Amino acid sequence: MKPWIKRSLLAFTGISIALGGLAACGTRGHHERGPMSAEKMAEVRGKVIERITSKLDLDAAQQQKLNVLADKVQAQRAAFIGQSADPRAELRSLVAAEKFDRARALGLLDEKTRVLQVSSPEVINALADFYDSLNPTQQAEVRDRMAHRKGWFGRG
Image (cartoon, rainbow, N blue to C red; front, top):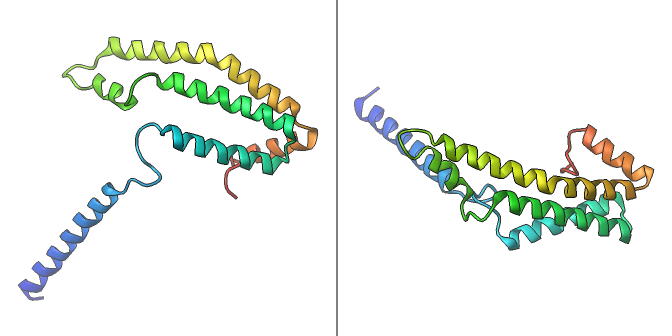
């Protein structure tokens, strides 16, 4: 093979890899980093509630209990994330210096554990209230969906 063809092919391959890498790094679609905005959270919450309501054919009382559960989960999530505008910045700060900040890491762990200990009983009670309000057929549907690894109403 002639040297100019080899060089051209190598250059084309290198440019293709570089452009592909830049395109992959530049996309910020579904996997956008950082916490969801309030608008995005409300949109996702609405879709999840609508999907669960339609799949289980919930009545008004059951839907109200589902909304209470969603409120509790959302409050727990907000408390877990905390007041930080960028939760990942806290983690990056642990390794920002030459030595790992063990004291800060333990402090973060204590803070997150405390939030879970305080808010989890409310979430569990709301989940139990919702599940107990379902009729046996609806409960069986929930168990079936969870047994088939679809999560709580994944696609499919």
